[in-house]
Length: 272
Image (cartoon, rainbow, N blue to C red; front, side, top):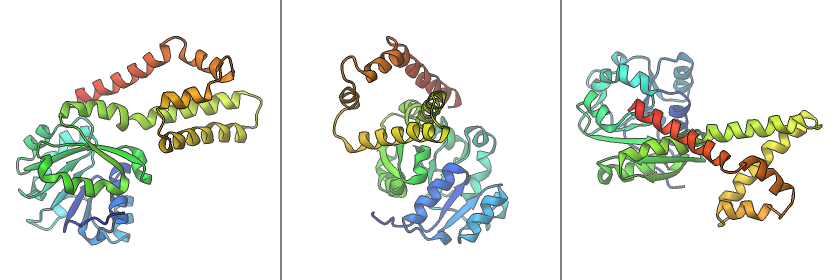
């Protein structure tokens, strides 16, 4: 793995699951803990990161006067950002690269609330980033200036892609940002269905989840299209075909998936 050329100072505002996952990725890349400053209201999170050598703060007023950062990671929920973003102006300089991982909050909205910011990039990660298997998508109208820095900051968390139009971030949010939850729900359904058969609960759960894990690994390692992988399992008039016909039921299953993604994308638009 390529080692990140560490910025001298990084502030992370919001050390929840996603902010925490990104911090862990940076530490694995060799970022000096002393260069990371964490701002959060959660005392347990602050205690944890303080114990690992990071600088921790509960309020903007606690930072040294005049201190600003090379990288500012904004990892708050969209509703919280709208209410509190302006208070972070004190931590921004013209050279700060602000990276937002908040769904639906546009670059223009951020710059209107933080007028000192000259470089803004939106990144949509997902929760598998916590184990280095994430997929992240970025957008910035200053991509040329911050492309290398942004990609190096996120390389430990998974695969990184760019979109050229910020409106595409709504689709990204619906598909990869929210997508793990849809797969987790499908896994829940597999487990519940497996347990409805005359199998011991532990075995039913193992069969359902390990099958899903194995299938995902096969998708990752194979050069075949997913439709081909499906067809390889589906013998004519066999058990898999019978199950798929019940699942698909015409186009109803696909229509449900499309409706799911559209609802998530629409909500992203509403938050922007």
